[in-house]
Length: 139
Image (cartoon, rainbow, N blue to C red; front, side):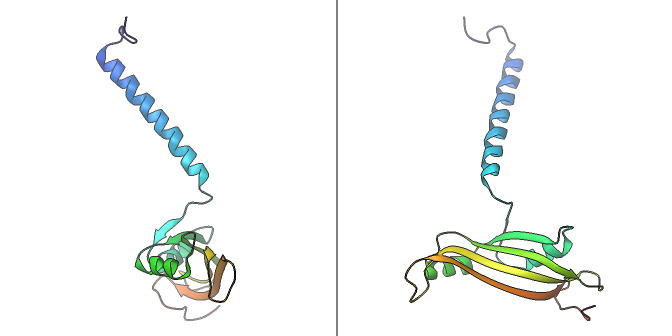
């Protein structure tokens, strides 16, 4: 006797689909659990600046992609993607404007005249509004 021989073909198909979906959900959950954070792939940091302004937490994280990211990684022999972390230092009274702290970082960067690869970090602050301009006032 074949397994599931007593089940109707539609029931058997439904059971197989549910089993496959369940296994896929488990595998997807395991893959997501391995990710330290959800990061948005961006070719331009502006998308993350806007995301941080809009986010209730005031934060956004991403990975720089595209030709620029590839060129930087090749030039400095980085061993990881270029990560970007944006956090809100202060929200201004002008709607949609904030003081943002931006950090770019990459592991395994080999700088000229430095003996070993290391994490390279670039931090800066920027006053930024949804329209792409600085705020009219810092109050």
